[in-house]
Each structure stands twice: as structure tokens, then as C-alpha cells.
Image (cartoon, rainbow, N blue to C red; front, side, top):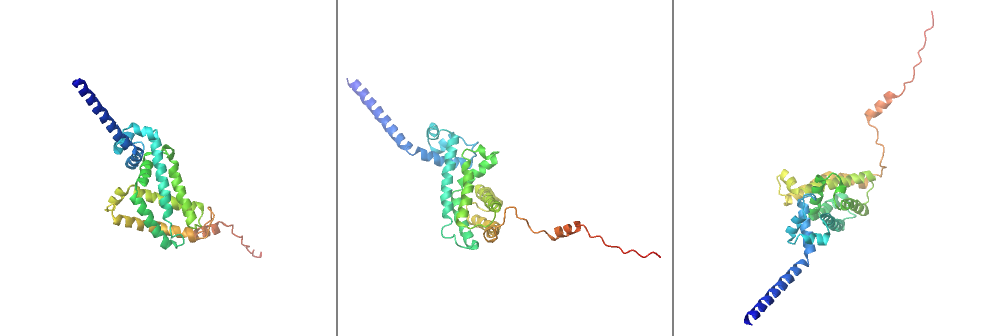
Length: 266
């Protein structure tokens, strides 16, 4: 009897231990989805979609690998969830960059806008790093799961600018301005470590941030002023001909025949 009682006590202890361990594990898994998303942001900002694996993400999140498939179904769906989350965060942050500067002239408002935008992007570089990495490793946008959020990102910037700044340029000029501005931001923030190294700077320093702001001002403030103040022109507007073109056109005109007076016959 004592031996049987001892076995029962040991069995009860093991059962209690299993319940305790299971209880702790269940408690940890309550926020497993959030930890997976956080880990995925980090992994996808360091590795392209093709190079990153769900096992890498699971290890970073500290969860069992099957939990990723339980919560998201596949790597593609997890990547798309990250892209959607980043798009929504950037949309709100970008909109706030225009607070109290909508009616300032561009030479005053644009530097403030850049300070706010750079502050957000340098603090949250994963968004542009993710775009940068996958632009390099793919052939077409359709190869990236959730690629539509990259297009929505560009469209959201265009729409926000149109709603907060009265741009008078053509659609072609506005699109060129936004696209070139984005490429610069993606390059100098998405690969900030290498870019800063080229300049013999620290990517996390105020010096690099100030250099980036001044460079964007030099390149894009004149373009912005032209879009705001220039008279609206059609997309296929004709530019005035140069002097060379004018002289060339004149030379191509048929010359008037001169009347030659005939000498009277002697």
C-alpha cells in the first residue's frame, strides 16, 4: 500500500507539472501572433522574401515553427500581412507630416516636412529596407506577395500631396517628382549603412540625417516650387524653339525668286 500510494503521489506531481508547464506555454502563446509579426518585420528587412524562411522567423520570435502556419497559413501570407501593416503605419505618419504647414510657402514648409518624414523613416527603416531588398531580388512587382501595398504607398503619397498642397503641374511632372523623391528615400534610408559608409559617416548620426535633408532640399525644393507656382501646362506642352531651331527653320523656307532685269539687246 505505501508503495502504491507513493506511485500515486508521483503521478499526481507529474500531472501537476504538466499542467503548470502547459499553462505557462499557453500564456506565452497568447501574444505569439504579435511576436511573429515583430520578428517577421526584422527578418524581412534583413533578407529578401526569397531568402527569408519561416524557420528564421520562428527562431527570432521564439515560437514553434508550426505556429506561423497556424496564424498566417504560409510565408506569402505572412509577408503580405507585414506589407499591409507597414502601409497603414506609414499612411498615418505621412499625413501627420503636414500638420500646421499646409499654408506655408515651400521654402518654409518643405524643410519642416522633411524633418518629420526623415525622423519617422530613420526611426522605422524596416519599411524602406523591405522595399529596397525586394526591388533588387525580383524581376517584376507581381513576384512580391502584397506588392499592391507598394503601389498603394506611392498613390497615397501622391494623393496626400494633392490634398495638402496645390500643385499646378501636369500629371506627368507630379508623378516624376514623387517617383524620384521616393527612389532617393528608398536608396538613402533603405541602404543607409552603405550610403553613410560611402560618405564616411555614421548611419545613425545627426550628421548623416542633416546631409540627407540638405541633399533632398537642393534636389527637390526647386522642383516643388515649379509645381506650385508655375502656370499649369498640358502634359504635352510645346517648348519655345531655340535660336538654332529658329534659324534652321528659316533656312528651310523656300526663298523668293529674285527678278533679274534683262539687258536690252544692242
